[in-house]
Image (cartoon, rainbow, N blue to C red; front, side, top):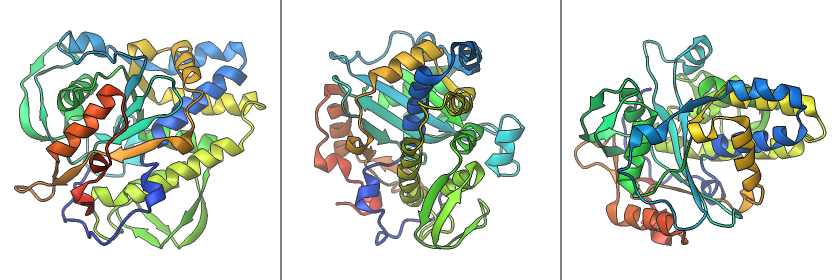
Length: 358
């Protein structure tokens, strides 16, 4: 994927309400549809859905050198939206000619505290410069660690287990589970629910994604939705951070659409959505079955999206390469400490200088 080339216009802000719900389109939709499928799908579909899910043995790849588990029953998930071009459908949806491999286009650390009545999602900007630790690839070979690598490159260079290890090293947070969904999966999920209604705030004519819409209400199908959440070049500053507002808006519209449908009363619809979601899922081995996913989803039944808090890792523009961002250490440390200790996130840790916030 192409990278940001200009610094942001700090006068532009995503709406305050939208910032609160950033980037959970993957997490909530997948977990919710699995929960609904578990309650409404006939038993003879179970084996097909179960066979859709792909698993990765994260624990074996990471070994014992990891942060301690939470002393409570809280859970931490790493959720990745992959821009993989693998397969004809993903390659078509990716849109970039000559781009191969895959990157973690969207990355969220989702913290579910003890009690399961709320959740916090920390978005890691894909252009963040991080230290990649020594990692083991899927074929058993080792890759030496390296400083100042782009976060989204770790996935393509070494694989998902190394992304987990990188997040654990930078945060000190133990990742309990891993979830990944690709381009085709995102599209299929939106199409399965019949599209999403979006009130476009201003005209979008984006040459990179091919999205051309006027301001006003629109119903986006899966392909159009993917273009919408990937749009950035037609926005004010063209940076990766600038499209956050669109992703926030889309998330809320998607959740509203899912809630409006009587999926529990329609096994056919529930199966269709669950089939789309599971076919695009890659998880850690512990979640790589419909039984495990459904059990985990039921444990989250008390989580209310309206009370869910979403923050971005506090970053600032790198002094050497202004097209990249780096974590603001004091604020990032406070954020990760709150996640580790299952305590409220300090207000200062929710502000990112790269967005013009204090």
